[in-house]
Image 1 (cartoon, one colour):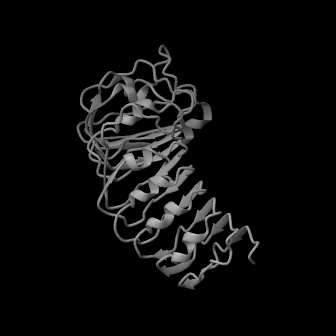
Image 2 (cartoon, rainbow, N blue to C red):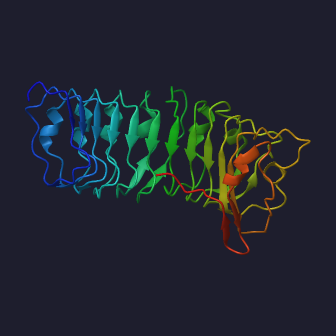
Image 3 (spheres, rainbow, N blue to C red):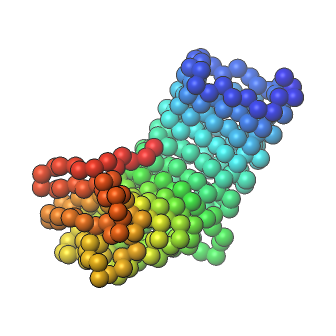
Amino acid sequence: MTTLTALDLSRNYFSGKVPSLAIMSQLSYLSLAHNNFTNNIPASFANLTSLTYLDLNHNRFSGIVPSWFMNLTRLTHLDLSYNPWKGSVPTSLSQIENLEFLNLFHANLSGIVELDIFLSLKKLTTLKLSQNYFSVVENNITNITLPQFKYLALSGCKMTKFPHFLQFQDELEDLFLDDNRIQGLIPEYIWNRSKESMDSVWLGGNQLTGFEHNPVVLPWTRLRLLALWNNMMEGRQAGIYEYHNPAINWGLDTLSRLRYYNHKQRIEPKAYVAASGDRQSDFNMLDSTKGITRGPGPHPA
């Protein structure tokens, strides 16, 4: 057992405390996902310094997120989601310099979390902070090399404005900013980044009133889903409502779903999808006056 390098105990529904694994000092892969483990993670885990992959999602760990994670300097993948943790996000996570994937989704965490903790992790490409009890804030980011995210989930993080660092993101594939408290206009830089990679954009459930500059052509060539439901759009936002116009190249030939719901007025999104062929069967529409939903479109976990 002392030479074991990979241990996968996921989906066995084990319960109780996790036993010490200190003798398995060569472990590089450890998954305890989808069990019923409780209490704290054993402090002996701090000695598993060969770990590159650690998955603890869907358990019942209820202590604080331990600061000794910083000792696991080889970690590239850390998943702590779907656990009833206590307290806030430890700033010590910023010391795991090789981290590429971090999932804190639905982790019962609270307090105030500064995005700077994660922006110092240069290799980080996936960050999931959605559906917690904390408020995410951002200090002014200047003169530093930022990570280039592919998957960024900040849903329900009580944010009041668009994160400034999005201006410097060119490789995003999925962006989740829905169910926040973002007010006012959607800044132009949201539409002008990650042109070749963006797959889905979720901006619903905010207090957005329109666009800083209506986009004449949306530049995202791979976009499949744009969600703007439950906002406060005012006026006729041509960049959103006229996708059906064949005389204009909206750059949405790959768009399969657009979700729209407006508190202010009823807009009939008759044919937002240009040149999408049979993909129109996947189109999702929300009618604000009747409360009718047409088509699929669940929010991914």
